[in-house]
Image (cartoon, rainbow, N blue to C red):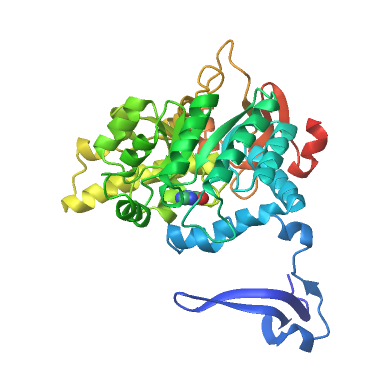
Length: 444
Ligand code: GUN
């Protein structure tokens, strides 16, 4: 194919001329002659632009901060990206648009049930509940609470936080939607006073709600909690004292939980949401799934967007497998040898176990195991219609001679994405068919 004589491209061009440094050529025009870059100019200096790579406003809206800050520690990431992003949801119209995109994106990726951290202010959380209800997803939703060590413009007074948490519970229960449950959400120990945590635990008892928070996530967080609460040996001990470890509690991460902590959580019926992708970025350690299960802990799988960079539970499953194999590799490296022992193998999980974590494990963690997680008579019908003949560059998947349906299914887990999902069902209702931007029309 012959290159056109002269082309000009306008946009922002990213490259890495120096190892470790990312450079942006902003609003530049790159003029290409006979296939080579002839000139790079500022946009205003170059009149003839044949192709504008700038994004339309609709596309700009799509991602807030998912996929950014993958190179900074948790505490910095929260301050720089998470808190401002959540704070901006006070603009209710923006919250409406963003939450609709978020829920649609999860549905398009086949997430039939999600556990959401909303934001601090009451109203955007009610928008999230309304959005989930309208779009047909199943969810546990929490209004985030934080009354200290937070930005001045993104913090609540303890009593206001408790009042709004109760109002949120009442609002959500008042919807009488059997798919949506409210959740008590002390963000994590560093941003919550004991008074707030105890008050929230009281609300959880009063209304029988779920509880969610982040536990023993990374060294920065754990060390901060040790300094703030030297009287307690661990995050788990703090949460226990506050009354937040119940059989309806789901704690995210838990990479630095000790065996005693895990046994303690298990004795309370508390679950951990294993978020392998975000643990790689924001955590410092491995969560050992098989070890935790062997100690009796309930474990489900999470994407943790935006801490994780993919909204896809298929991706989370693959990452859970990779995480477990990294653990084995780590043990082998520490041994200094070339023999993989049965002890090292113990931590490895297969795609089947990852799928169990994403379905049955998640259902158990959310107290939904009698309703969803498997195909059994009497359970509600949450399902994905998968077509392995569809796909882009990763699919359609070749079929090898003698391939059976189990192997084809394994390929879907390992290679598939939203393009393979023809339809998504929650409670027997099709909540995704075709393009997600047509979704509302199909559900309503
Ligand atoms: N710890 C406290 N807040 C957060 C959050 O929003 N995401 C993650 N991954 N960890 C946290």
